[in-house]
Image (cartoon, rainbow, N blue to C red; front, top):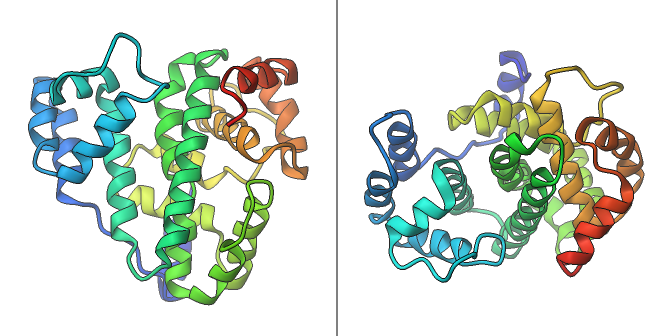
Length: 270
């Protein structure tokens, strides 16, 4: 976990955290109310045209498209479910809140995270941890938010991300950490905590570059981090870091290399 001393040190270093939007706070409150369903969530979403567009586009994407296009916003929310609806709202709000950073880099970071999230969701549905699918999707959508937060303080570090390839993205992100003097994974976890996201998500974000020495039985944050690692592997290919995640993925998710490669083939490797 990220303790208060770490939070204080990061904030004192000049890092400014984005604030959660009204739409996110309203959705969080609605989801905490057992009486709220797709209609109530859709009413909140309808007040934010950008979010309406994002949810509709994703709900009708290949990852969720099953029986024709969703005909109404209520259908969109029902198709996605509450967790993914909130995840997409949080992702869109974080992206909008990160002003002062090269927009091309913000777009690239969020586009990559969306691809990682789609792969993590796909992997979870075929793993031994299917119940974590929506949580893994949520965590993967925001796992690299800390990069953009750090770039607000150290804009010169953006140079290494302007011409980055999929295979070199993680190395470039860690170079941003070195330039900023803080780990983007830890900063991302602090943002998640500040936005009152579930502790499970904040912890998975914090450790997404830290393959554990061993898996702890019942530690779902580790399992979500494993699913993020599978998503990253699908985008970036095999890396030195993946070599450390791979045996943990097989042990913790019951996904081996042939199964992961088969999933990529079915998705066209994109």
